[in-house]
Length: 254
Image (cartoon, rainbow, N blue to C red; front, side, top):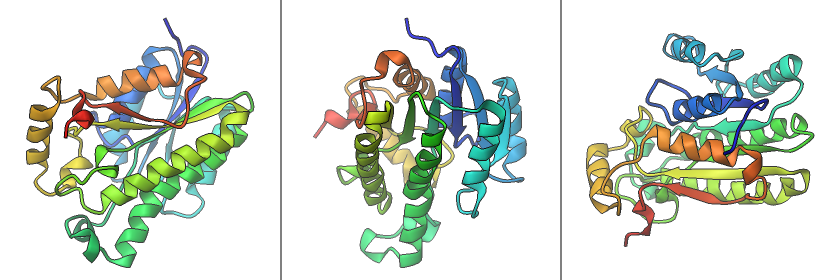
């Protein structure tokens, strides 16, 4: 049985109790890890703070990756408090609504740049800072979706964005492997999260996924958290660079 006792985990992306990041944070905590949790801004703080308190988070700080200096300030604070880190989970994505609901070919330059910066480059920046706090190795994870490799109706420009996210996962895994730092992309099926609800006709996507998945049901944030906790354990130290599907087998259907 694996354990995360003694490990320190940073979790970015909790918006509410239905967030994938919340499921992962709870799984990390249940396996013994200490937690650092972030919130987007003062508007989001009242929704996240009670969850962080319930999880016993030792560090609770703001992080808006669009604000210059906040990523480095977060890792400086973690370094001061803990000295090192073992787990880094990135579960954030964003695209302006007008561009998210438009065809890929109609996506604006500003919309595409914003989506790539928040959804992809922020993960790169987080791993860059985490590297210096992982002298004995560690695990970095992000969250993707099947629309990265196949066309999923209404997923639109987030498909190419997630494809880029998976590509940087592989490249960073190759670069950091010699330092015993693994890098993963978790790929859950559709989930009822606040972020996903911004997709056009999202309820149809949920219904279709439940019908097409071999298990005939949607996965939960607890399913994703359990898998993430295993990947963060020493038993998974020789696994890296993969896209891990936690989707009831949804991705195997034509």
